[in-house]
Length: 414
Image (cartoon, rainbow, N blue to C red; front, side):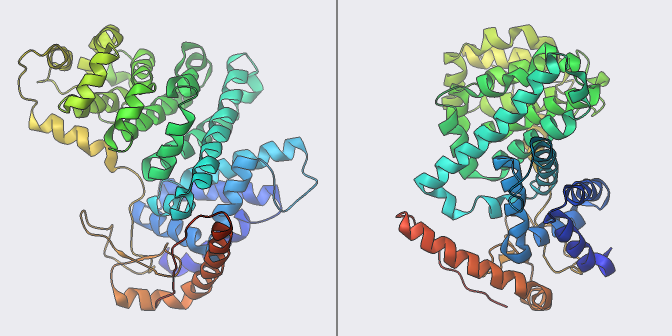
């Protein structure tokens, strides 16, 4: 693919910024195919290039289409076209947002202002509200909509899960939204028996995985752990157990990919922390999870009686030390997603090493480099996008200053 990489970027950019809905559909489909087949490093590099393209024009277009549910290029868009664009923008954004670099480009420092958090909260409410509306219509028997559940329900949910996984600002916005209604009140319907029965087996399973991913993100992130426990994440986990197969061998994703395994990882992570354990006691977690103890144990490693450990920890009784293997696996569940890679298309360094950050382009703050040499080599194709980003940053800084916000200065380096 390296020889055609630049052409592929241009092709996708043209499709995803086109005024023709069919082009956007084709771009979203091609992105998803590449997400599945191109390899993690190659797709990550592609996502980073699309995030940097013309200063972020592709990401802005997709977010506008997914949140405002309109085509910014056309003023005469009818309802059917609007819904079509919404679904395709969500699909494309769902694939791209598997990259932390992409989500960082979406929710950069300018979103940390009160106004930025308010808009971010609106994005969460728009995406979650629209997907729940469609899910309820499907559950009520509008079977023709079930054919499009992947685009109208799964894709926006994937966006929410990826945004939460990669952005502290987005998690803060979720906290703000959940002050009015809990996380379970907002998303729990997706785990109800009715919608799980109505959806295809594949889509029902994917929803369970994504909801478990959200729980993992909120529980493993220090900035969200405690508020999430107060605002419905335990009910979400219990609901995932409730609709998961009784035997993990029935799960097509296998043991360590099953939603129940991910939920076990959350509990194993929370129990050793006294502040989190106190929250579990305060929310009567023993009674909440007792109906699911068999599924908890079924998804645990054979040498661990997870329910006995869970019960003993919360009741203050001595419990055996968790096998190191179980602890390691519980922490490794967050390793999925598109890794950060060097943006030079011929780099073979692989993903950014743990504990070491690749250097960012000081101009666009998107492209990453393992070395000065690769930054120099990339500049030939990157410079036009970097300069466009600089122009956008100047505009954002002026707008932020008018709103008493702050923006970091930036300069292009290569």
